[in-house]
Image (cartoon, rainbow, N blue to C red; front, side):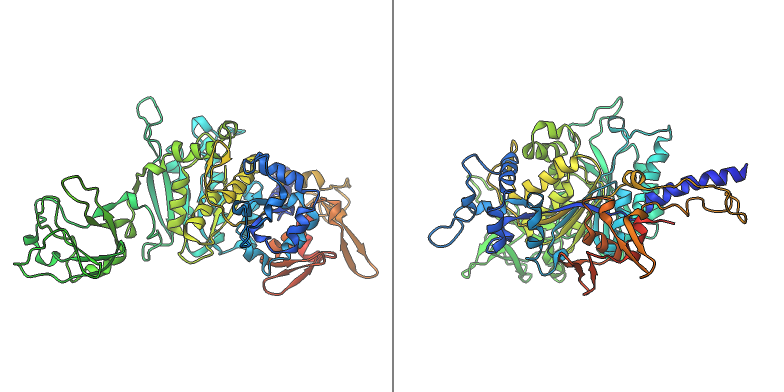
Length: 604
């Protein structure tokens, strides 16, 4: 009986090999805003191309252009030479309408992958992670994922009744692979609700046992989600980072969570209780620039804000009743928190003029484990964002999107202030993570990048249109651009070969299982002799060479990107003949190396 089980298990082993094999990159194109083509000969080619009509119609369908648009408007200038229609500089060109110009567009960039702002990948995420790992290993600073919650209203369909264990297995497999993507200093966010919260915590503890894991409560629905006994107003975000020895969660965000006045309050907050905490804070141009000395006991400021001849303002800890209070920090130690102080102008009344107040941004220190911010409301800042970008039929597909502001704050807290942070989301959903990164870049002038993986058809109907819309304008209403600010953007998107594609194309020959007198079929791997997808090559025995014909498999293989992922190297340039990587290595695209491609077409 055990021999039969071993024999049958070989069929399952073969399916596992297909599941885990690296995948071909297919059907790749680019989204590039027109500002990146300005001043080049390629723009003139685009304007004369027969694909322009379809591109213009897409811009209209996306709510970027009116019927009065004329292609000449893209290059018209005023008498000073400035663009006559500056907003058109951020129209997103999709190279699928201009396939014969794609290499000309890519040739405009000296270092192609470095010039890209994002990668959008249409694929089942486990297969994508396996395929992408070599290229992005140890490069990811932040991961934000919002996996299926397994709640009754959005339950995952299973072929068995092992609901929770199946969920745990699905999450564990993907998190385990994604750990290899992480840079030395990383922050890893996983959103979840109460159904699988405990189980997810156990999975993360097994995967990140040597790292710090914190479960944060996020107030995301103040109206409450009705239940029999409790009305849920919160969900959770697990935050994993290297350790508590250093600071990883950012100095720039979550201000509304713990934003307190620096002036002490309460019954023991007067000047006489701590003389060293009574001194002026020096403000100029709305910023704290220094601190004055502690005055003598008989000195009393004339007001809470004393304007000096040079325009600086001395801010004293005096309350609205003109009583002399004290600051939280003594004069000899206050310099250490200067970067955490903010100047806020008080509201004032008719009887009392506005005064400057000093606030301590505690979020620049440590974060609270409850994030309660009105902008984290999933309805107002999640669903409504999609409704403004699209029509109602789109938002019906995503009834519970995350608050855009929540994702922005998570990413901002995780990324370094320097340019070039890389964010990964392999449960991309409607594309909120890419939207958040783009907003942060627009706000801060940074060039953080994103990688999104999504398997659903909404990759094409929601994610790609969303990226294009957000690049064109920061403001939308009822699916139409509503003023706003554009953002220069250059993004690659593609499909990955999938498990089902391989099953459809692999060849397994009929053979006599018992033709080897030295081995029984129970002892040897019965699929070892099969051709799988070897019909994509020609072998020349006399010359001892192998020539690949990948078009026999798929007509749309992006060989340059496929080789990039196999070699684990970033692309510098692509020509019709070769792909060159950032380290100078060149690989042929007309006669690719069989040994590099071999694992994709023949798995042993």
